[in-house]
Length: 382
Image (cartoon, helix red, strand yellow):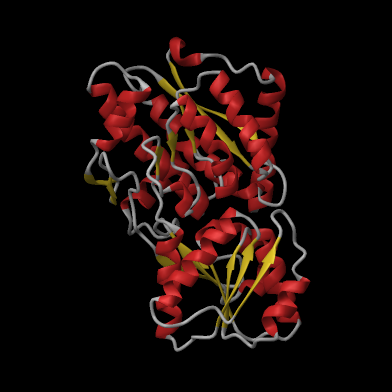
């Protein structure tokens, strides 16, 4: 079954649960469950980002709970669909706060996360593992926010090093016209400026749109060696396919948020040679411990989970979250404050083979970045 089919199957179950429960989410901290709130796109052009991340996280939490949880307490993710629209994400966050969830978990994208920021900050609610590398979520430092992935600055620095090592210096940037796209553009500009270069041209696309024609015309006219795309998979696929039809023979690079497998599925044969930077190890090569554990978990009961970068990231974020929860539990009473202190106490450690670093002054756990490439047959080489 392909990626889109998995997503439809999974999300139909999630919609049923929301329909039955409405928005009266039980205040569940007292009945043995540790309830997390996740606002993410489960419908619309970016749906696979939310669906796949959630599937991976749920896989870990389900198996953790089946093994006894944390002193008998189970972890549960409650999801609300925001369609990758910040206003809906902010409203979902208000609902989670009113219901007194323990923490917010795995929000998808900078626009929604930034819309939610004033609400969870005022409520002093931990915000763990957003699927975003935006610097605006990292600086200024907010002790409620914990990042497991590397930043877009880290990703774009690697992309620029990779491109210039190949002699490709005429670099254009196609970015989403919002806080996510601007974060990627800022990263590209910063990395290029450091070596005396600048983007040869830039163009934008609106969030949740695939209207890429004007952007392609603007960028191709400058004859760049490559175009770096900072957008989600639907518009990225539309750009690559349309640019190639227009005769562009250069290369395409994407940051990890694009949704690698979703992009490969959307492009098919047109994906051959498209590059994506990644912030987690390959979900296909068991050389990495976290990947071995992930693939073994799928074999044991993850028949709904397709191994890909987004689902592995969800699994990894859940794994790190539990480490912070254990630290808090071992220290005594489990509270939001003890969870924050417990996660900071993780320090420099390797969790399932993945190096992380937390402290009271650093909540950005990783700088891991590597490069992968689409093969044109729906597969990803890393």
